[in-house]
Length: 98
Length: 371
Image 1: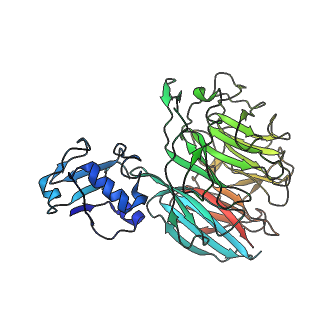
Image 2: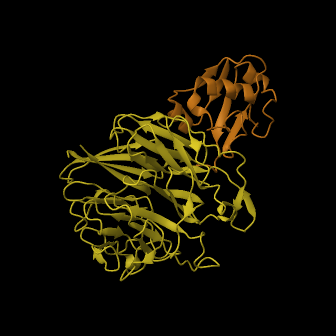
Image 3: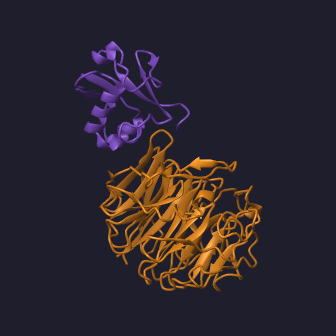
C-alpha cells in the first residue's frame, strides 16, 4: 500500500481527506504511483504532470524520505520506505507557485 | 424577471451574488474554488442554471468547473486543451519565434441555444469549443492558423483570447479579440477568420494602421443591433457600424481613452459604458476618482457617473472582463475592481453602491437576469 500526501489545493479539488492509499502493481515509481492516483481521481489528471504521463508541472515538487525526487526520471524506483508504505510520497506545491 | 445573479471571478476564488429585482439586498456565496484564480464564470443563455467557470493556478494549471444548479454545487470537467496538429510558433516579446503553449482559459462563452456547447478563449491565443458540457475540448484551429498568427506577439498580460461575441441575428457570425493581435470575425461558426482592424491606430506598433498587432482590450455589442461594435483598445475607444469592416474613434471628451472594459446598456443600443484609466503605466483612475463614463449617443459625448463611487484616493483598476449589464426593466450595470469591490447600479449608472467591498482582486464580472 503506497501512501500519498497531496497539497491542500489538490485535496480540495479531488475532495480528499487526509492521505491517499493506493495499490500499485509492479515496480513502485513516480510514474506508476501517479498513474494509480489519476486512475482513482481523474480530476487530478493534468494538475500534477501533463496529460498522458507528461512532464511534472513546473511548480509541483515530489519529496520522500527527506529527499527531493522532483528531478528523478519517472521510472526511477521510489525509496524502499515509500514502496513499503512506511513513509508517504509527498506531492508539494512549490513555494514559488502559489 | 425574478432577480439577478452576479458571477464574480477573483484572484482567489469565485463568488455568486444574488438579489431580487430591486437589487438592493444581496446574498453572497463563496469563495468557490478557494485559493485558485478564477478568470471567468458565465451562465448559459439557454439554461440559466448551467454555469461554467475557469479556475487555474500556478501550481496545477487549468481546471474547468460546471454547475447545473445555478452555482450551488460544482463539478470539474475536462481540462485538456491541446492545440490542433503541430502548433508552430508565434513571436515572443524579444521577436524570436516561441512555441504556442497553453497557459489558461481567459473567457468562456456558452452558446446561445445549447447549454452543452461552450467556447473558450485561451492563452496562448486560441479558440476551443466543447459540445459535451465542458468534458472535452477541441481547438477551432483556423483562428490561430490565420496567416498572421506567426507574427502575433503577447501584450503585457500575455497573449490571450479574451473576448468572444456570438451574433444571434446573423447565423454563424462571431467575433473574437486577442491581445495583442486585434479583432477578428468569422461568418461560418469559427471555421475561418479574418482580421477586422481597419481604422485602428496604435502608436505602439511599427506600422500604426497594420492589419494585425493592435492591443484590443475588449469588444461589446448590443444583441438587437449586431452590426454595431464597440471597442476599448489599449488607447482609444472605437466604434464600427459595419460589423468590424472599419472603425472610427469615439473617445470624444473622455478624460483618458485608456481602459479595459466596455459594455452596452441592455435596452438602449447607443448607451455605452467605459471606465477610463490614467495610462498604460498608471493602471488606476485619473485623479484618484473612480468614474464610470456613459455615452447616450453611441460615443463621442460622455458624462461621468460618480454617485456612490469613491472620488478621492482610489487607485484600483477595472479589468477587461469585469463589467456586465443585466436586462431588468431598469438596466443594472456592474463592475468589479482589483481592490475587491463589486459595484452595482440599478438605475443605468446614475448611482452606485458596493455589493461587496473586500473580495480578492476581481478578474471578471458577469450577470444573469433570472426568469
